[in-house]
Image 1 (cartoon, rainbow, N blue to C red):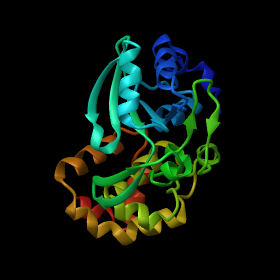
Image 2 (cartoon, rainbow, N blue to C red):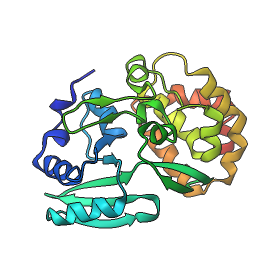
Image 3 (cartoon, helix red, strand yellow):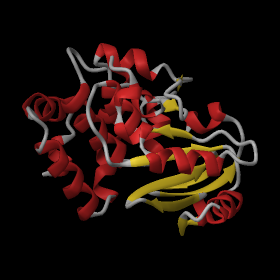
Image 4 (cartoon, rainbow, N blue to C red):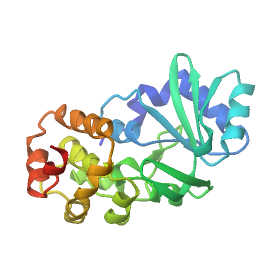
Length: 235
């Protein structure tokens, strides 16, 4: 695993200014998701997501007071986009999903980092890092990343029931980060829920399959999809 302080997105002036502004009232902003996951593997990332334990309206006010441009891209779900020095940051309040409607959910805001982690899809996407690169890893994602294990957070069947697209995301992430045999619980849950793929929009399925095919070697994941009875629901 690589130290995150080698990542320019963590040490840049834009990130420093953003974290100083967001934390001015005592909140703790943390990077989360793909940038942290990829950074630990020594890969660059420009897709910067930040989680924070304060309401989006408070984050907006603090950023604007610091001269940072803010766009209210998804206030209902706690998300705003901050733009500073040409870099976009998606800032989302910690939240729990009260009701799920596929891609969309009714949410409630929280200050509990564990509850926020529990709603995420895979453990390797639920690793947080503060402005000093210190990790917060309530789901054990760092160990899974090191082991090449793609594992759902909590109950795999429940995570998939919240959004059937996670079936296809599992196989894509297996192609990108998996090593050896896939997680048995995850594979079984994907196989059981595979008929639900038919309820997804063609655009969402297409985009996910194209991303899978762009992996360095997608063949093993495609074989897994076929063996689990998933591929037939895509084709």
